[in-house]
Image (cartoon, rainbow, N blue to C red; front, side, top):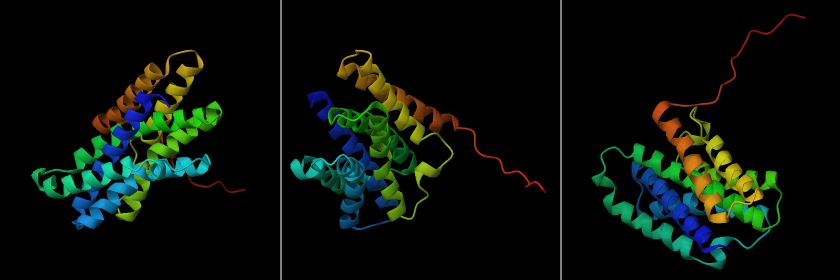
Length: 207
């Protein structure tokens, strides 16, 4: 795997761990709870990806991602009180993680020989599953169910990465483009409330 891809994987783990620890701070958990939620968020999506791809789960091969999650949990436990409004930080940390993990999940699936569509789906799942676990465990409304674009951002990041590689763009450039596009779309969702059209209920017809 390209060193750049490994580097962005660790960055994604870190920012997702931050988002998990921030939720733990809102729930006033103890330091063990911080560690648990940071780990669930930071490595949950990657764990599901590896299980579905039938490959060794990444943090069992190299425990560095778990160490990163636990270190961040401790740091946030002692510093979260400095931040008055934590939810915006949670949103932005999660936005970065979604964009990076969308690319990372897609790239790992591609390296395992998956087709374009499967690689994109794996990117989406990698990017969103950790946050979903975090919100369900912490009894929060999952970000994935909010009206702003969310899964779409992971899909865009993953699709851009895979398509660009398919047309001959180097992995580093394709990954960077995917991350920028995915994060940019999520940023618009946060700033402007951008969302996809939703279903509008209508009265049933009499037959």
